[in-house]
Structures are given as C-alpha cells and as structure tokens.
View 1 (cartoon, helix red, strand yellow):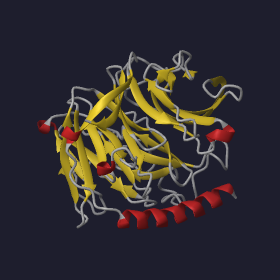
View 2: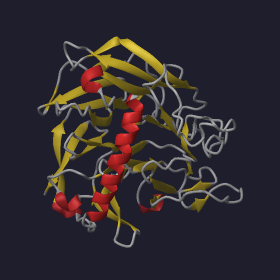
View 3: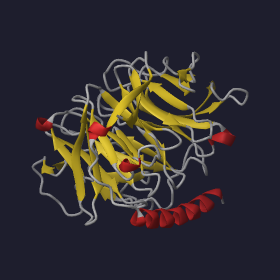
View 4: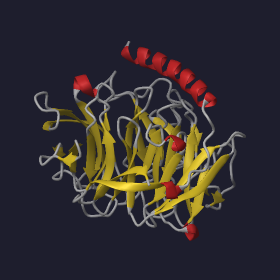
Length: 384
C-alpha cells in the first residue's frame, strides 16, 4: 500500500515538476567568475561523498573512503563518527572502500540508511543500518542487514553510489567490474548486475524485491534488478529534485568522459559501453540500434581523466544557477555546466578551473551545492 501511494504521489509530483520546469526561465551560461568555493570543513582523510538525511535537521554526512561516516552539524564535524565500518572494507586498491551512502525517505521515523562498500574480499556489499533512537548522530553498528552482495572480478570500476529515487526505490550504480575495456562484457551482458544501474524495492520484501515496473522485470533473459545498462563506471549520479530526471556521470576508458541523461521514470536505457565510449566508437562490434548517447562529454585532451557527477542546482541563494547541472573532473579540477536551452539542445561550457581533487559534489536540504575535495576539505558554492 505504501509503495502504491508513493508511486501515485511521484506521478503527481512529476506532472507538477515537469510543468514547473517548462514554465521556468531557461538558464543562461553561468560565469564561474561570479562564484567561489568556501570551506566548511577541513582535516578529513580521503572524503568521497557528502549527503543529507532530509529529516529537517540540516545535518550533513561525510563519507571517508577508509570506512568512516562523520556528521557535519552547525558548521562542525562531530568528534564521534556516525558509523565506523573500517574493519569491514578493503583498503588494498585506489577505488575500493566505503563508497556510497543513502538515507531512507522515512529516516526521520525508521532511522534507516544504506551504505555501499567493497568488503575485505573486494566484492560489493550494500547493507542497511539503523541510527540509535536515543542519538540520531550515532548509528548502531550491530544493526547491519545485507541487502545485496555482488562479486567484483577486478579491483577497479566498482561504481559505489546509492540514491533513493523520487519513486521510493533504491538505485545502485554498478561499474563493469574493472580491468580495461570490459573484458567480461558485463556492460552489454543482460544477465550481469555489473555495468548497470540497479533499482531495488527495499520496503516490500527482505532483503529486497525487483520492482514490478522495472523494464526487464518479466524478461527471463535479463536480470530483473536492471534499470539501465551499458555503463562503465557510474561513479556519481543524482536526481533533479524539481523534475525527477536522472543524471549519470560515467567514467570513460582512454579518451572520453560522459554525462548521461534519463528523463524521469524512463528505464530500459542502454548507454552503449563497451560498444561506445561516450559518443565515440570503442569496440570493433557494429553499432546497434537503441544505444543512447551522452548529453555532455569531454576528452582527456581537454583536461581530465575521470568525471565526477554533480547536481542540478535547485537552491535559493544562487538564483542564476537554477536549472544548471554542474559536474567536474577528479584529475584536473575542472568544472563544467550544462543545461538544455529553449530549443531543447544541451549547452555545455567550462564553468571553473580549480585545483581540487573532486571526488563528489553534494546538496544540503535546501538544495545548496557543495564540493568534496579528496584532499580533505568540504566546500560550499557561494557568490564571489
């Protein structure tokens, strides 16, 4: 019953959000010189993610790769970790560790949240934990429930991001399993969970169920958890909080980095890897029908090596950025903007050149935008 209500409400909000988006002023190309990044937290060790619980507390939560989650409250990082799973995660490769965190939509009442990490064997684990009723700044380490475990054949391309969609389902970004060129062809293997965007119902069954409206839920030849396929390493993805559209930043192989776009509620998309790398041909196979190209891309020659997905700005402090999606590159520190103009064409421009190792972006409850610098700082985007 609850899921039916959520889906009905999601459909209503989608209609309202789409109308609002159509009525909104089309963004203009933003000038990075009008903005700056202001430090809000320092002294962190390889932070990878920043998110909020959407519970009205205005707290933010910082994920460190070694297995710690910290609470950022009233401008201060609390001394006691929210959760310490450092003894559970693998630390033997650059792309392994505690990689994702998402709070249940009903966290305010059920105190549940989900993490994504690579275990000591290097395999992906998504687990549910519960915060203490007496202290919501601390989680119960004994409350772990395993949701899904996925074998990883190589130490890289683990994906790792988690997010609850506007439909109430849990989305999981899974890389192709690693090595180079996707040697196991996971991106295009319909039975594999690697190289995919997964969509799980974690409320109606234990540990989860495949939602009946997943695009392949009734196809015996495709894993029912699959929402989208043809991904190499979707390191960070996000939903537009106004329109419910999904943006997926997929890390490229040799030459190209890409941003994929999925209109609200439209699963079943194949983004092409490893037939394609962004909009360029990669493998020697014929290009098949039904592959969806990215809406924004850049080459390594332009300055970068690993795309980090961001958010569509929907805050109130920087109104000129409303409707603009910002994303960056981990290696170069470059940040780009993209949006659709009045003709429906995507316009991508360089926004800012920084010296940050951009491991993530983040949003607070009000929709203001933050940057996670793996060098140890959290910064907020403000007016220059």
